[in-house]
Length: 163
Image 1 (cartoon, rainbow, N blue to C red):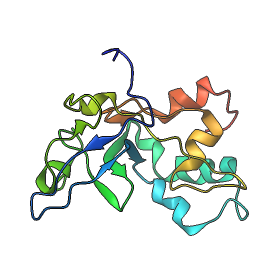
Image 2 (cartoon, helix red, strand yellow):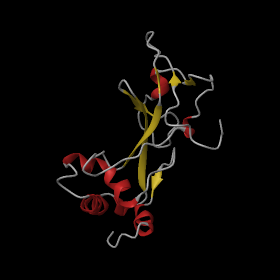
Image 3 (cartoon, helix red, strand yellow):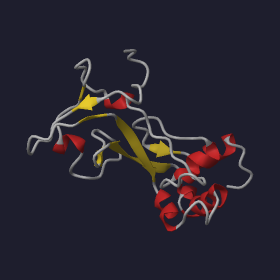
Image 4 (cartoon, rainbow, N blue to C red):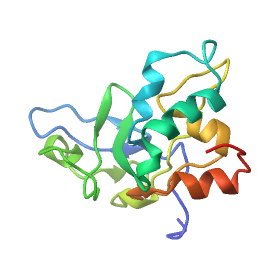
């Protein structure tokens, strides 16, 4: 495995619950949430466009740029926990509070959390992810463990005419 590239999306990780004998093997990925992205919880993509939602979000949350980015680790079977070592982590518990450190199911390599893929988010007719309007409109998503997001810079880079 190339230590400079993210793990393949189908890389399977094995870990065990710290309370019991549950030992899943599954792909894992990083899930991010930009502060204020929950504004999209009130709508569906059929009700509001990514551009309209961006405009509302920007005027309410992004003028105080930079905006915080919060991280979780996710997998199948309802695995969704705060990402260990995240600089914006505000909870007293995270993935390693509940599970052992994951290892590659095929090689035994210990997981490097920073090499997990960051999930793509969408805001379109097929899918409406929380905060997906940001990536849908600008093409931007954070790098693993990125803790701040300068919305004005990304808006300019994406050629958005209105901030």
